[in-house]
Image 1 (cartoon, helix red, strand yellow):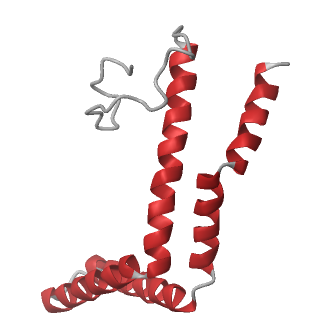
Image 2 (tube, helix red, strand yellow; image 1 turned 30 degrees about the horizontal axis):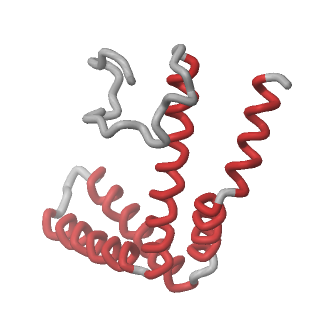
Image 3 (cartoon, one colour; image 1 turned 60 degrees about the vertical axis):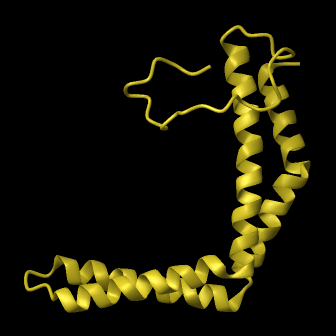
Length: 137
């Protein structure tokens, strides 16, 4: 079996994992929540209005502040929506699993014994920027 075939097999296994299914079920629930979709639509509309206001030469500080406040309030409503809360929780769990898989694959490709690697990557202070980094793991 080739590496690519094994990667495809791993992809299929990931799609059977409960974290994957929970995440995609939560994403579908978000898509099917009319109140959440309404709030997202209002949020996007207000954000566009804010961007348009910011591009104007004769910006109104009052309008900018008002729009910014409204956007913040709507964002809080979106994030408090039960479907969005579930989505964020399941997304975090799914991404944590993907990070662990990537950690094992990357370290294996760098010569480490995959059977000796921990199931989760060690906690690091990685900023996400590789520009000034000495290297991972």
